Image (tube, rainbow, N blue to C red):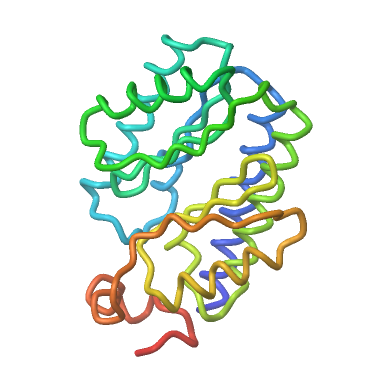
Length: 216
């Protein structure tokens, strides 16, 4: 990876971490987006442009519908990657957890749902700011690792649990998990990957965009 690309990725990571921290501290909305919209900042993505747009639409529509249905009784994060939706956060009852999943199931273009909502009181602003910082540190660690292409990963942290999403090879999945587990503040890592082969990776990733130590 070139010095210029490393510098650009570090700037992006810093901006995303700062934005996440500001959002966490503001506590403006009980339902927040997982971050597909900011993917447009990064030029390279293993999803098609159509899939990226679909993910942004899924997050926007799902967040709006959940907010209308549950209001400030719940704190729900919606993260969509390649039309697979991760729900994290807190809801007051098991019925609300199932209701949230049913609402998102009916959103256009959703392929699958991973429902990681916890039945408990809403997390505090302190916890959310801590999670935002952990996410930033995990992203930075992925950028620093010479065996990985950090843009292939989407990172979400909720109450100390870090979720990893993305279209990655088995090698990348294992290495990314190892890197995330070594970051301070990460209590647990949950993998929600779409696995691809090394041949598929070579087809979708330009040679100059691959990490220095990646198989050729």
